[in-house]
Length: 360
Image 1 (cartoon, one colour):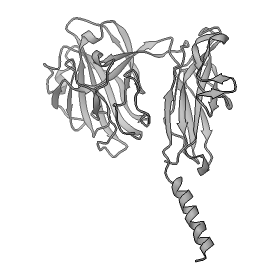
Image 2 (tube, rainbow, N blue to C red; image 1 turned 90 degrees about the vertical axis):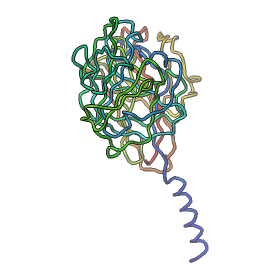
Image 3 (cartoon, rainbow, N blue to C red; image 1 turned 180 degrees about the vertical axis):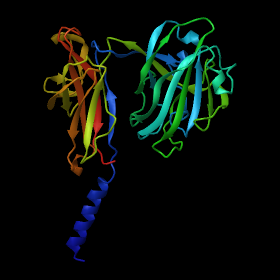
Image 4 (cartoon, rainbow, N blue to C red; image 1 turned 45 degrees about the vertical axis):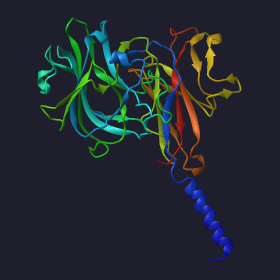
């Protein structure tokens, strides 16, 4: 083989291998500012003593093989009445970067007089203060990639499952809160896998679990369980920017917004920096334009108009070119929603989204 041809093939091989496998990622960053949309508000961390500290990591139940799971929480950790509207989870500290997956699950909640010390190993015996409410009917839930930088604060609950049916919590002496998660399968063929969630070692909780999903009895472990954030319903929600896929070359990438003011026009900003742009450094507080609680989080290289529907949701689709030179490129997004009473500027802002282009 001629030397120049061999050299060309070696260089081509090196270039191809250098770009062979790049993980496409998406992670939220920064904070939005309140609008007048209906959605998820305050986050009630359970167990309450985990609000300011991390625990360890565990896969049961959300990253586990088919399982029926119950976890009680002390009613004293929820001293005020409110309407529950979602469940948030946080990444385990020092966890490996985990790829997203799909989990087939159902979530039910309700009242119980049981404590970790008195929980029955028979699942049906534990909802003893009224029938459970199925807040998430059986559904395929898309779990995103774990944030590559890991959690920086115990307040970082990066993944939320909104509830289709809300639950009105009313505190009462001797009454506690019980969560049941039934996992029927996942996109890993129903196997347990390495996507740990933060877990609590706390005297105010415990877990009962049994396989398969139709199990009637299980194993009770006291002082251990998932750290959960129970989200309150509010009509001054922070509009939320997220994605349930990642930007891969030659494919489409959809950026979504929910919890926005219903039936409103909106704009999606796209930029290539989250630290600076010609107008100054980022994030940029927008008090001077009448939005003191809001910040611009991305430079502005592209603006697209889109509509928020009657449920407070909307999305923008980007076509990612099939160009391997784009691998590893980060771009950033943030949405503005027309919301005349949110502030003097007349817009509510979402959090930002940090996307990295990849090929897997």
